[in-house]
Image (tube, rainbow over all chains, first blue to last red; front, side):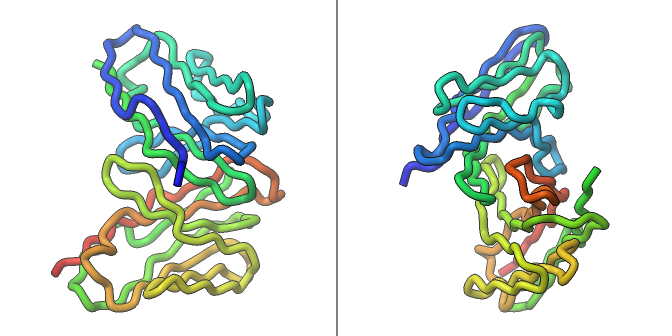
Length: 111
Length: 113
């Protein structure tokens, strides 16, 4: 059973550094989503792709956030010039229908 | 902006008791999904309900979607310590398109042996 995988699982960085996270979706899923979850909150939708097309990116938190899915398979989420407020769990999900399946997340800590 | 309110936020009960948690909104959703999340892990999908008034059962868990597709409930019968976790409800976009889910803040459930 190959579910959604994310790498790394944990990332500690210093303020001002750039970070990149990777998501590998379930192989037959053409839709891929990124969410952010902070302590005590539910996941917050950031962006999504259908195949390689990014169909929604207005919810990305600032212009420091960007995402790519160049070949319609894996995706990357980059945060430039990280701030302490970026510390959170970053979750990826994939779907073929209206059901989204989540990966284990990447926990980001910005010092 | 679509919002989902979950209640209660925290619930601690004894093993064997029954409980119900609620997910309410003033907005209509195309679907409603329930997830369970363990600390440090991603949410795990439990069920999806799509039709107003729909009821689905998963062993001791019963899920209901409101007639107007604005609210949902999760009922657990004879709760067990293994049911402990964060229960999240999430609504699909009203138009039914492939957009992000709107999540509630979750109900933290603790089942004490």
